[in-house]
Length: 115
Image 1 (cartoon, rainbow, N blue to C red):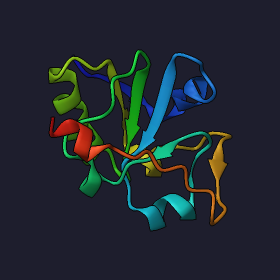
Image 2 (tube, one colour; image 1 turned 60 degrees about the vertical axis):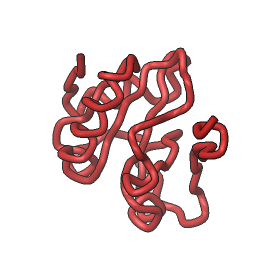
Image 3 (cartoon, rainbow, N blue to C red; image 1 turned 60 degrees about the horizontal axis):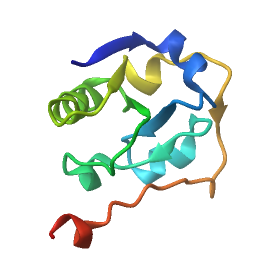
């Protein structure tokens, strides 16, 4: 099951040891501004899978629609997932990073997934 969280609650997941914040927007959008500690997995690279995690995934996109679709897909595969209502545009917290060259990309090992 996917839990929707309001953008104002996102701050409590920043640096939380049991959570991983995932930004599903493009690299350019991520570099223009993202939540501190978020990893960038552009929706085009997502393909409905992530490595196995014991962490809860907190997904966001620009407005919330793409992250909701991704969260449903991941939840159906057994991941613990929350999605941010309204996405990055709704976030007004203290942890926006605006600095080019700070991209933390999460790579999905496609070769491993084929075996």
